[in-house]
Length: 104
Image 1 (cartoon, one colour):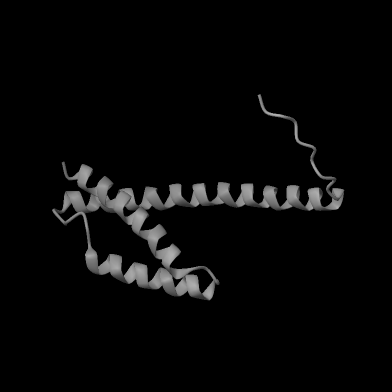
Image 2 (cartoon, rainbow, N blue to C red):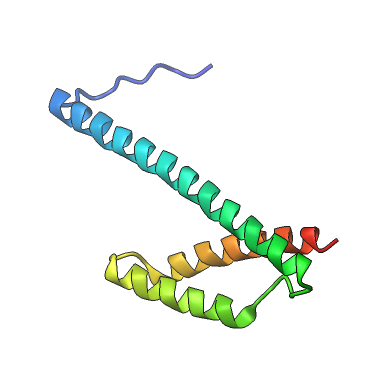
């Protein structure tokens, strides 16, 4: 059984600011989920088009251009470009997996 730990007194204004920031983070997370859903709706259409016309599921040249573009945008936004590239790599891998499934 854990012992109760006395919590230090925290400034109520600091707690209110923490709540405000966390609320903003929650809203941003929701927006990210909705944006990803919209992106995957579009990539699903791309996959269907590729499957219907015998095009390959992956397009390494486009993927490389997209990663370079996203890294540049990340630098402009003061976000770690390697993190942005890793994030896009993850998304691209999932898109390719979906495209391959459509091709049977």
